[in-house]
Every structure is written in C-alpha cells, then in structure tokens.
Image (tube, rainbow, N blue to C red; front, side):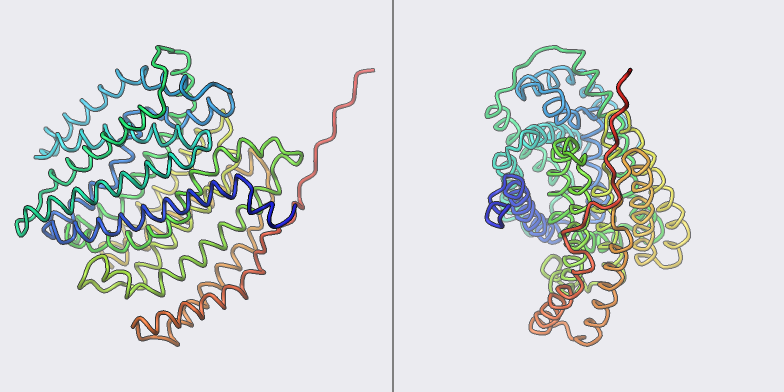
Length: 478
C-alpha cells in the first residue's frame, strides 16, 4: 500500500478527526479552567477540583455501563444503531432515575451539599451525552461525534463567560457552575437525539446483554475514578482544598496530553480492535505497531508539555509556578493510562471484561498506600508520586492479564528503553536551557524534537509481528 493510500485510509482519517476535536476540546477546557480560576474563590475552586472529576464516573454509574455495550451490540452483534440506542435508552430509565435518587439523598443528607440539584442535573446530562457520543463513534461517525464534543465545551465556555461578565466582581458559586454545565449537556444531547432518531422500544433481553457486557467495564471506570481522586482526597485532608486547587492545575496541564492521545485513542481503539481481531494474524501486527506508536507519541508530547510548563501554566492560572516534579509525575500517570489501553487487547473480549476491574483495583491500592505514606510528608509532590505509582501498577497488571487471554509479544523492552532515553534527554535539555522565557522554551522544544527524532528508531512503527505463530488446523477425522 502506497503512502498516499495510507493517508486516505478511513482509519487514519477517523483518528485524525478524533485528535483534532479532542485537541480543540482540550483548549476550550483550559480556557474554562482559567475562567473558573478567576470566577471562583480559591476554596470554591478547590471544591470544584474535587467534584468535577467525579461527574463522568457517576454518569457511567447511573447507566450501569450500558453505554459500553453500544459498540458491542452494533459492531459484534450487527444490530442497527437506532434500534440499539432506542432500546437501551428506554430500558435504562427506571435504573437511571433510581440511581439519581440515591445520589441525591447521599449528597443532601450525608454531605449536606447546598448544590445537590445542580449535581443531579449535571450527572443526568453527562449520562445522556455519553450515550450519544458512544453511539456516534460506534459506527465511525466521527464528524457528528466531533461536533458534539466541541460544541458542548464551546457552549459551556460561552455561558460561563457571559454569566461571569454579568456578575463580576461577585464570585460565582459551585452550584451555579454545575447548573450551567448540566444545562449545556442536556440541551446538546436533545439535539443529538433528534439527529440520531433512535427507535424507542422495550427490549429487556438487549438491556440484560448490555448490562452483562458493560457492568464490569463500569466497575473499572468507577474504580479508576476513585483512583484518580485518591491523591486529591489525601491532599485535601492534609493540605487543604486550596492546595488541591493548585494541584489540579498541574493535572489540567497533564490533561493536554490526555486530550491529545488518551481520549482519541480510547475512542478509536475499541471498534478497531473488533475489526482487526479477525485479521489473518488475529491482529497481532496491528496491535504491536499501535502500542509502539502510542508510546512514541506519549513520550514526545509529555516532553513538550513539561519543557513548556512555565509558559503554559500561567496562561491557565496567572501567578502560579509549575512544579517540575509534580507535572512530570502527572504526565507519567497519563502515559501509563494510554499504554494500558494500548496493551489491553484480551480483556475487551466478552467474558473477560470483569478482569479490567481487577487491574484498576490494584492501581487504586497502589495509589492509596503510596498516598498514605507520601502525602503527609511531601504534600503535592507526594500526591503526584502516588499517582504515578498507581499508573505504573495499572499498565503492568493490565499487560499481564491481557497477555494471559491474548498473548501478543509487545516490544516492552524497546518501549522502556525509549522512555528512559526520553526522560534523560528532557532533563538534560532543561538543565542546558534553564531560563523559561518564550524564546528559550522554543529553543528547548526544537532541541527536544531533534532529540526525539534520534530516539524514535528505538520504537520504529514497523514493529515486526514476530512471536506469533498461527495455530495449525486440527486433524480431520478419519
């Protein structure tokens, strides 16, 4: 296949659209964070930083994981998308309402939140828009997906800026912020439903199948949400919510790479995995090359964000100085998450999805015990190291469990060598170009790009499919 044919391939086009749209969404989220940094008090910003990451896990919880099964029922079972979405949306109403009721009672009577209604509005809206986004990407409808993703962030930013303009200089409340977010996602979800035109019907068989497939993945998502919050909870306990707010700004910087790599890859990979598992080599060459490319891109982008930290962070939160150690560990955690997706082939097979929860539980335990020891001693630095520890455990355990189901000889040694060389080079460049002005940062990024071009042959994308032998056919009965 020629290079031009590769550039025209639907797979490359789709992942490019995912990358561009999530990149735009990431930029809008950073601007939203800047607006919120100015609009909220430091304490309220810390509370927002604690609550905001919980919205997606709670949205998955009220759906019982059925959003994960849309791809499976549409791709593997061959059902029409309007039928799948209509049946699942209809059947999930009782369970979703019950979950929202329980969340509301806990928020009201256990945590005494003054913005419980805003919380429920946001969780319900996030659940609905999650269903719509998954529906679009299950068929490779990348343009509608991208439009929905970008428009939700753009509309929320416009609403935030407009309300802030009217209310300034009075700070906004956390409840107002979440009410605006919930209103935006619900409005856009209704537009997406009108465009998709699902066929509502009660199909409990399809719903049970969806819960059976998606619930273990839901547990994984929820446990990962706990893992993602563990370091912040310990930091809030020992250093206060204002420290959590500053720490979350470093996480927002690391999220640049998450938006650029992890999210587009996570959107693109599951349908492609179902397609390539039926290749003549059962997808082994594809999966190995994909993992190599993900590792190389993560290493490069992590270095770019880390070297540009003193320019990027003041754009989000003026007056805050980035910590090299904290940001480096946060970027390392995102890289581990990306690689855990790339190495996870076997655990996406029906009947094995529950093992994803085990992998994430190990990561939670590692983060918890590391945070117990490190956060009281080192504050934000300890929280960041505990996050990295959880990420290393996640990618390691996921690779091991997946290999037991689908043995693929990923180039683990070369990946490790690539990251070790990249870390050493980034540290050297940081020492050579210590001043963090715009010109020096540009010089550092040029040096980094040249250095990574020299390192990349360690992980050249044409990874051979060595290590896989096609099984021989069983002997025919005589």
